[in-house]
Image (cartoon, rainbow, N blue to C red; front, side, top):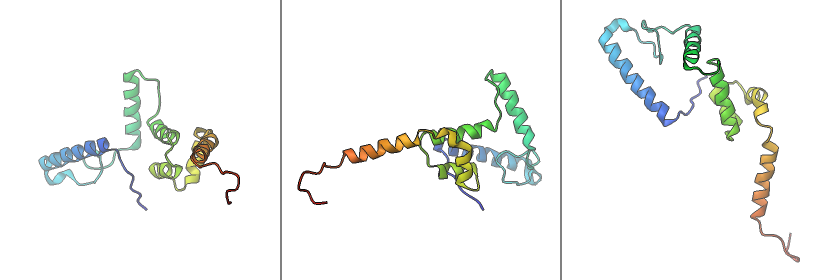
Length: 139
């Protein structure tokens, strides 16, 4: 099953530019270039081994002087930030590719401790907009 996720306009533009550059490169290489449909294939069109990205990312982090963190930690950061700003857990679950929202909630429930308090604030705000009943009003 394929699930589509929305991307920020900036990301879509970068991917379109990248696709155009790939098409130009493919034309220059001719029929031997192969068509994989991958965003970042090896020069022969085949997929990279997963550890290639992890190794390259670790080297990038070291060179940048940042505190060490794994490529996979970007995924956790994305989910955590989305949940903290109030994105529905079902949407976060879909973006992460989890088979169910319960996996997302089990993994990230520590991010949501203030949800009860947030719910009460919303209820208070909704009730504050209602006209108080006067004596003799019908129920």
